Image 1 (cartoon, helix red, strand yellow):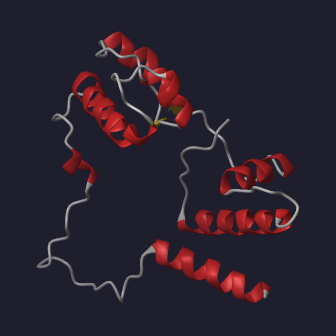
Image 2: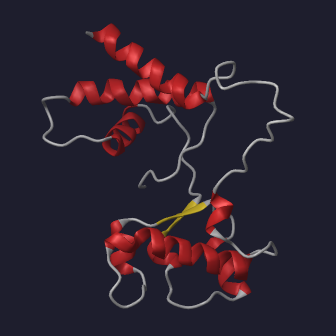
Length: 167
């Protein structure tokens, strides 16, 4: 399976980031090309209990049918899935508009999401603005960014600290 969507707590992200960086360090100088993709697979091969794999992402070439979905298509193709993976292969093997290339992946993905939301959900039609989280109301917020650091910053700080410890 191609790892294309990950989810976890802050602690799990930190645990996995350390596993992936350690795995990459083992392969440094031994492999011509090693990525997080290969590390994720290798970590699981070494220890199948290191993380849980769920088949919750549908390949992009499966959803790129070139037609608007019916309710039957929604149920058959995307039911129970959490996302679609628009890989290079998906764009090459799926049905896209004439002339579209790999560089058009964002446009292709947004077009699919708009169609899927209109055909497969009862919500308001999808708009790209729906991807942006709402700004917090400054009147209601009693904390500042300094008081409440983001989990991303913590992850980056932990990775930087781990890297300097190994030196």
